[in-house]
Amino acid sequence: MRRYACTRGEEVITTTGSSAFVAALFSFHPLPRTAGKPSTAVPLDQIQGGTGRPRHEQYVKRLNQLMSSPTDLREFLRARRSRLAPEDIGLSTDGGIRRVAGLRREEVAQAAAISVDYYTRMEQGRVSAVSAEILDSLARALRLDDEETRHLHRIAGTTPHSGHRQSADRHQKQTVRPTLRNMLDSLIGHPALVMGRAMSVLAWNRAAAALLGDFGDLRPADRNIAKMAFLDRNSRDLYANWKEHARENAACLRMEAARYPEDPLLTSVIGELAVKSPEFRSLWADHRVRDKTSGAKAFHHPIVGDLRLSHETLRVVDDPRQTLVVYSAASGSSSADALRLLLDWTSDSPHDAVSS
Image (cartoon, rainbow, N blue to C red; front, top):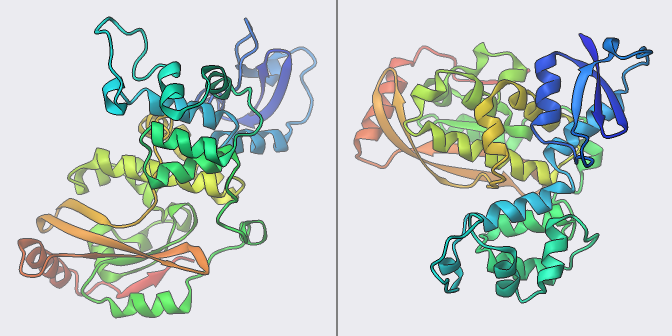
């Protein structure tokens, strides 16, 4: 590993890693620039006198900034207003050429009933604290849904992190709760898995292995829904709408990063995906947020072909970072027949497993 000095104006931050990792780390979510002095990264051994020890805390801090930083508020606001047209919020236009995509700042301010100067300073990061009332007004003006509104409050610092035990348990290894284990064992005909921090797979049943792939064949660190989505080429064939599946995963990680910005496992997963997947980098920069709840997914399985399954997420009240995800097919449907055929085909596989 080479040592690198990453500069921001007159500031120098040193770290170690491959050139690809450093490039992704410091360009994927750019540091604020000093006028005329962009951020750069060069090998430390090419700098005269550059023999100082790398500062690990700066490296960790930069990864945490990648997940959630003060710039997130202004970037989120810009991204959201760029998706709306004046007509979406009941404003009329003169029909002329618009120089910006989406809403102008003054249009957002008008819809939110705040001054243009105040909103401009918010987007420029020059407001140290924003009231919950103003954030709610902005959420209505930008047509944010409930999840996006909660995310807006979190990155603005007006809502405490939901994981009140974060500081105590973020370094501990997760183990499957006995109640979830019992429920998982009882779901013989339904693909089901227990998902933990950073979308890691803690446990699964035989049906889930048959549908999604045998997690037991993977290293424990690679038993992760998001990693499989972006780094396993087979997932692009398995999910009929892979782009939407990838978008959901990036949005779920973005939501979790706002709640648990100092989680080292989450830092590691996001950092690895940022380096290895250009698709993830693009989706992460889109600032979409989404919680893992319920929905439906279409699969194109290599053994049984096409099937469409609904999924539900059951979250433990006193341990919200451990969830049971269950897939099911509509009774009497072709998908139900395909799922039964898949389970019969893989009947000699182990019933379930737990990550080590």
